[in-house]
Image (tube, rainbow over all chains, first blue to last red; front, side, top):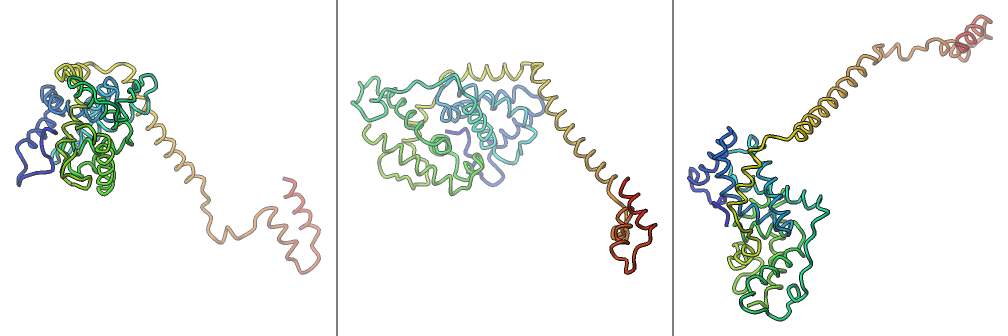
Length: 193
Length: 119
């Protein structure tokens, strides 16, 4: 789940959001501790979003790191009146997409057919791991934008309008992407439980 | 992922979200944070500095070229009045005189036309 709910802003702004804006302001002024707190807070989310694009965990971590470093350089472009998460996630998504385009060496190992096609259920102790493999394979089948949209919505808790802002697409398109992604993922997971 | 929720639902699907999170989560957050902070603390490499300079240099060169082109274009533009533009000059004037004359041309006009055309 994302560190804060940027879509739900009580009047006057939530203390958590102010805190992130304050951290960003301090980081922009060269405060490395503040930047470290931002990295710590958003690292899990950034890594998940990057992995949704890149599949390979090493590539994903490289992209997430690129994104944090790019964000540090671009902090003067961040508007502290707005939530930090969507601004950062846009950079993460772009960094991951750029890396995916450049990627030539590392390739994801193809998954065994029983993991992608509803084969026999594995033993209980391996079930969670196999479910993860199967979900990643299912995600990999989706178009990139659809993958990012469903992860941002169902995993990270961003609103449709925030995802539209992150991906630079209309809100209606985000709803459509989430709808199609969910339908496909549910199909693949229907026989799991 | 199963149950009452439909793909049309505008609420996050907690079960699907939980399963996806588990599938995408990477371990050792502390190591990753340390790695990012170490990279941020590292002084910019020479190549990166040169690349940044090159980008700025290219942008400045393009701006200078555009400005120079604009100024040169402005400097060489004719400043003649509309009447001047219509009036024939040089060989053109002689040729027009020959064509529009109602009487047989004087030899001097033909000569002037030939001299001007030869230049």
